[in-house]
Amino acid sequence: MDDRTHSAAPTDADLLAHAREILRAEGDAILRSAELIDRGFCRAVRLIEGCSGSVVVTGIGKAGLVARKISATLASTGTPSHYLHPAEAMHGDLGTLRRDDLVLALSQSGETEEITRLLPHIAARRVPIVALTSSAGSRLGRAAEVVVETGRVREACGLGLAPSTSTSLLLALGDALALVTSRMRRFTHEEFAARHPGGSLGRQLMLVDDMMRPIRQCRTASAGETVREVFSRPLPARRTGAVMIIADGDTLAGIFTDSDLARLFERRNDAALDQPIGQVMTHTPTTIPLGTRLRDVAAILESRRLSELPVIDAEGRVCGLLDIVDLVGMVPSELVEAGQPSSTAAA
Image (cartoon, rainbow, N blue to C red; front, side, top):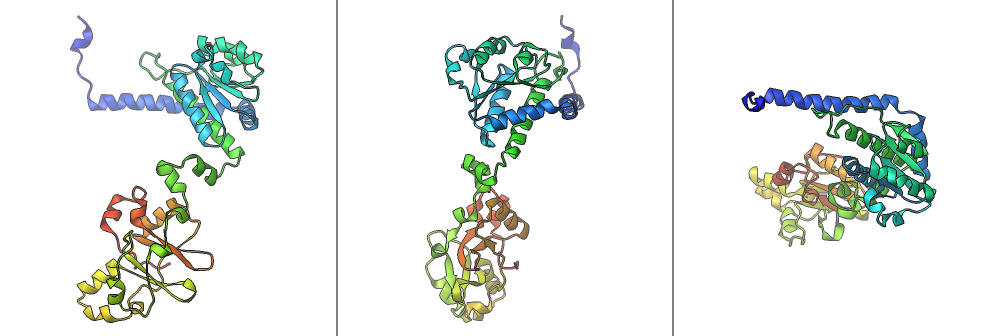
């Protein structure tokens, strides 16, 4: 009978201790690599940065999965890239490889059969190779123009077999190559946004100009109109809880919100409903300029507990309004649900 059937079930403390061992082993390997990388890394970055075609990343098994991620990181940070499956390459996909490309090959051992079989065919096309591998003396290392060595590592797997520490190290070095190259290219926020138009990242990098409600779709008033007159008007199609009070030259005189109106009722100040809105508005509301990124807008809304932000141009003219509901997912949901007052914070 297997002795394991009589062993006690591991406690939570045992599980956590084992998990920490794994994390420390992988983290230590990456930290050691940070101290050991040399000018070979720099040569690799310069080759990648100077590539006029695509950086073709290849690897198989777990290293292949890492290769796909590195290729995606390169492509999203300014370096054209695609993944080449080494087995499929031998059955026609080598046709995707061009003379102006660069191959980034991943193999911890440097002896992986599917990779080594590719090497003479890559050489025949005179395509340079950057190798991420344990040793420059491996078959892959000898065929490469530049080698970024990972060195010998012990896998965090209890059997010392399953790729774990080695793949974490390959991934970290690949990220370093991609991001250092991106910095060399002076990759900008605008370029990043163009490559990430969807999802949270894309929205954070958008400008307020693209998300704001234009002035024609906002609630506006002049300072002399009464509160009752302003709030008796029909609401715009996209409801917002703020009225912007516009002065001469289309500048912002102040702001009055639904929360301000609620406070008048709470204080039983019904007489104020027939007073000019200019007497009860906030005279120095927080504003944001055109060209502000949405992630910065979200930070202002959250830190100042606001619900609406008027948008102004360089001359101080009102261009539109950004409402907190326009940024759902970028600010805490409790702020959106609560509709925090927006007229109490000054610029």
